[in-house]
Image 1 (cartoon, helix red, strand yellow):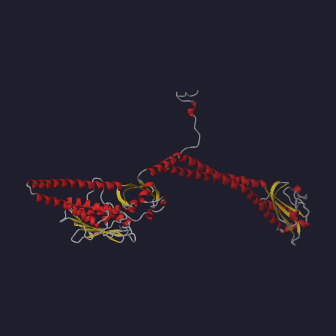
Image 2: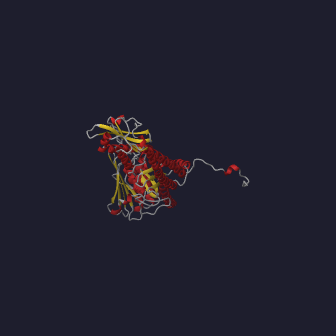
Length: 556
């Protein structure tokens, strides 16, 4: 009675689907088992094929050795010359003794005419041998497998010599070929047992390797792995974050397009040690794991980066990099805007007070005093702008200094340009120098606020193509043991702003100076405070030869 098929199912639904498995584990296991079986069968066949020839050769050599030993017996040659070939003669008796002692199938002694003097069957004595004895009687030793009266056998034939050395007959010894075949057949089960053992070990090793591969591939199919690799490549090279993968020895395993841009690497750097492609510094320390933490700040090639490092199970690591250059710039602009708003708010109050004062002077009809008051108020700002533009001829940098002077005034700090400053309008990288000067002035203002007679002085000098920049402040100064640390990314003594972290400005100054082949250092200011000195050897463009000069020494 057949079982009922549930509704909605057909008979074909219960059939087994036989085909090539999809999982990596199953495919690898089947392939390894097929290879192990094929190798075992091939090795067994290659061993058995020459075994038959080897056993034949052994049998023939054994027969030849027995024949040589028999021919060396001097009594046989003497009896062959003095007696007649009979079943109970001395030749037959000695030959049978040797046959029984050696296990040979037969020991036949013949005279020069090929007549048997001994044989396993006494009835054959006195008859001519069934095979040609010419070679042995002529003095040659023969090894062969041939058919005779007793069937197929491995034979050895040697001449029989008298004491004088004359050939008087021959000795033929045969080893039954059935015994040779029996040895071959008897060795087959042993060989198959060894082959089976080897196959079992190979199958076990294949299973262990396949299981390990199953764990490492999470039992995925080859098509799934291929799809994952394609998706990974698309994802890694499509995201806007830099990704750097390192192995356990610190070599680069993978670097995507964004990481190549941020770190100025190339695809050929894959496989090389990290220290061989990146200069020593905080960026290398962060990527290699010597500096630990989350959202670590670093500067690379003038870019502000945020790095996170995640170790992997094999001892390597994956580092993600985010470009915060624009965000940091916007954050600094936000800080500057907030400071400017505060300054404008304070200036608004001051402007209101000045307007009230001016209104009072006009209502009292003190017109001369009102004119003097307005002239004095406007003159302060005009004097500052004129002082800057007379000594700094680059418009971008001059505008920065004028703006910073206004901000400094509102923060209660006086900012001045040193009297011996003179910078021509030949800057190679004005934005880079603006960044350096802006960061140093911001730090100096923060340090000078709250000090006695707060003051910041900026000095800009040119010598051929070299620019010398000094920014000093009346703040608390920097201890000698921290003068190298202040240029480290992420290091700061101030509270972080709302938009992010501090510790970027001085690090960026050092990185920008280094890109131009320059240097930056900090020392004590006379009278207290800190003084930052930046030397930029290639900051100015070469002056054209023969060009007419202005009063300031610049080409017209």
